[in-house]
Image 1 (cartoon, one colour):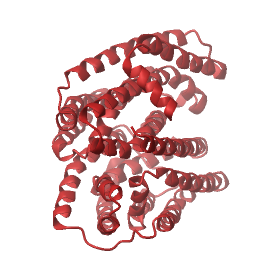
Image 2: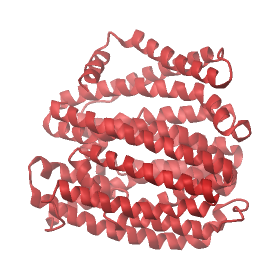
Image 3: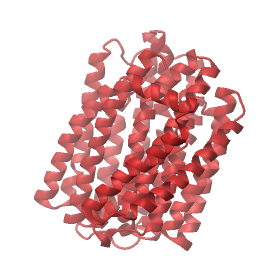
Image 4: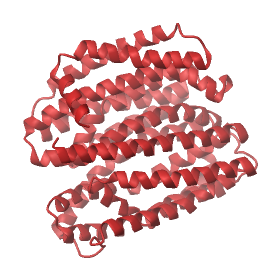
Length: 501
């Protein structure tokens, strides 16, 4: 990566980490308040509605990423007229999408009760809550939602991160205060659409000030419009697969097991997804730079960068996986108490889930940066089918375990398909060497996780024990990786890249 790309990535990652930390700690505080003041069923409702609306938001999937991709070239060429035309089309589509989501959401209303096994909390209406969540989602598209793409395309997501942190501090502060004062779930969710409107309008103002020359005007050519449509159609499957992979789990758990299990699983999933989100910051911040590199550097240089990033990703993912395996239960015992914990089998499955999902990050990032969604258009539907059928069948035999296992299997099915696309259309070489490297990483990773868990078994209980386990998780996996790989080119260049940042 050249200096400017590295500088942009470093700045974006720094502020995105701050944003993510805020977005982890404050919702964590809210989940705790809801759990102890209102009860776990309310957490289940929150997860269920979020999952349903994720499905409804499939109408958007593909649009945002595709438009950011098509902004790279006019930004590099300083073609402001083309940017304005793209922005106008983006605005039009987002308004249509918001309307489609709202209309589709209303069609779900008659079926809401069938998605909840058992009774809804007596002091709230399932339908009123759902309507507030639905309105909030639609407003995010109607109210200048498209303007934030300018910051991502210009590699200035740090600006968006700074603003998001400020808004979240106020929003979550107000929501926590409302819960503590009124002890009523309505007072918590009614603030969601209010802050969505405030946030989107402010982002619009920021982007207009930073890029006053970029307005929604002009028309894109029929050729470009056709190309965008092709990318969006192809990208829809990729993004839809990501939503189905995560959101359908909660809906199945709610419908077949109940809101209580949705809440308990949601607590565990929240921890895992928070860590995954931090890792995602790194790749979201680098996607634009990788996209630029694919346009300007040789295939050999890009493949070398890919190998370095793959090693760095393995190291990071292994450390996080070992930490999840060893720290999950001691932390959950302190946070939600023993009566709200799931068993160790769930922890093992979620750790495997996390590893399989995260080890694919580099490949998926290169695919997005290269815009090769059309070439990959069939894979997501295969994976979604495996996941949907697997969830519906396995949940009836193995309950929560079946849901997680089904998702893991679907991701394993995805790996060879997505690897084939990236190696064929970006690197134009065989992926055999990468599979060997991936297998080596996985075998080493499994051994390191087992060893780390064994050593952590000697730690005491309580907060002191949690701290001791954390030290072990920081020490054991990292020392082993350094000892095994410090002579490799990937390790040396990963260290150089880290020093530059």
